Length: 179
Image (tube, rainbow, N blue to C red; front, side, top):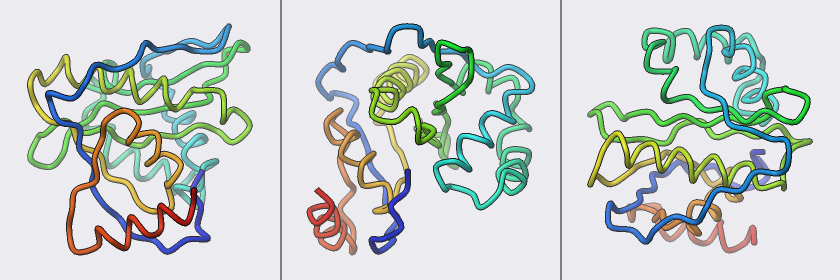
């Protein structure tokens, strides 16, 4: 979930193509990965709104319609969900691309009541694997912000690095304060 109590600074992270191997994926008993199927956009909107990425599910739906639906065929092999033992979709992450068609991890979200179970880590590992499969020998990218400092620490453990830019030291200072 976003922590809007810290200053907001957007930034990019990358994982070099020659980064060390990823750990094995582990999901809690009864949880499973599923790929997008038509109708799952409602779950995506619910999850992303629950983690405060959007102010309303309507706003999330407008984003989804504009950004993802033109590529619905691609969603079926790129947008992942995790279902809990009751079959409810509780987490999502997407193996997408940047404007210049570079591999991009996109829109990580785990509903608050399902956090701290390793679901985000499992999704990051699986989406990273997918992107390495779809884009062999290429660096991977993701856009994030200081509000997502918990996710940033997870990305760093999986060998993602912060691009150094004019805000680099400010970003490091904020991340250090949030530990």
